[in-house]
Image (cartoon, rainbow, N blue to C red; front, side, top):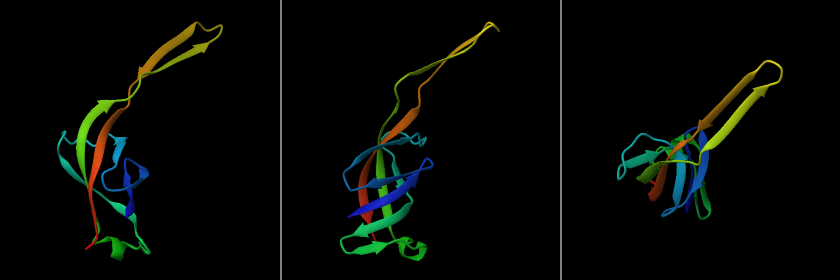
Length: 103
């Protein structure tokens, strides 16, 4: 059984026990979060309508919160003496899918 969930403006295909790195959720490590399901496939059965998905539940536990790799950038405009260096580290939450259940 697997489900397609939406979080952080993206969609992910998840199975029970899978670990997944998503945009930062703002929950503490060890917290339980529920992810909205878009699609659920259980063998031959596919649930996709909002009425069918109203009873589904996809639960995940926040394992840790961290930062991704450093991204460094540099902009330069010739003859104008404009130089700018910048950097960014995207924050993320590492989730472990604990339960995928239908009503």
